[in-house]
Image (tube, rainbow, N blue to C red; front, side):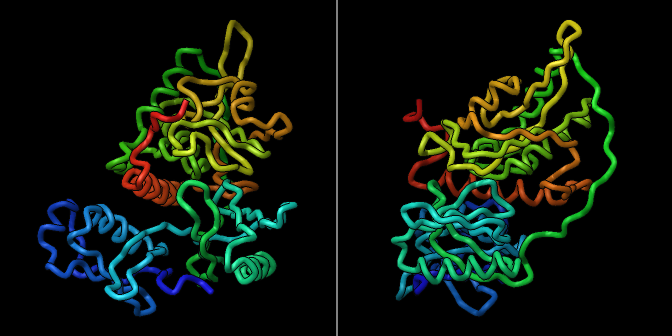
Length: 350
């Protein structure tokens, strides 16, 4: 049975209504705190005395605006929020079992391979929900641990699942560029990196490497195109887990795939493809170096036009989904920055 002290639902209102900046808002909150009203009628309280209250109020209000689900653990008696996690509403695309009996779950809006542990007390009921969602192609709400991405909670979702899937669009032709322009494009994208404490749009959350590569890649391509460079995208499929100082475990969770922009560079008449991936590198990287960093020599590469947002054919020509998914990942970055591990990068990582 799911945790009776957990509320997993969309938020209808914060009372009083949130107004930035967060610190000033909390000064005006009544002594009892902020009342959080959920869509199915449940109530939770954000206490003014909680040192995280201002940031949590901002996160909860963003979830309300986006109609995105929240997972909150509350005190059984006071209903005060003790923990906030950010679930994902999406479709199951794959399900496999490990020799140890754990379930490996692939999700449409994530490149992480999520794990449902056999020892989870709700393993059988959660597995049944996931299998049904895969068979019927119905959305689910998945809540996972913050760093290891192990599944904590699974619930069926309503009509708020994955967004519409637009078809392919025409895209300009790729033209090779000079090496200095390649470095310029890398710097252009890298300087958009978010402050983890205050990740404000339109920054790109490179410091949250766990998930969202497709949205980062699409935004990087948009910036390059605005500056006169037409990239492609390179996708890699495999068991990928690169080292990364911006993850508290010093490695990302296992990815089933990853994507980044790739540009053609003219080097003394020879055309070389270079990957622009500030999550993994501090400069443009060759295809070989990029694949090597991802750690699976058997991984497969695929190139597409930059217009492909999610394979095989989904696009986002007006960047509406890109903005939405980057907002989700900025929220993840802010939540991590106020966690026990603190903001990245992590000094204990080599």
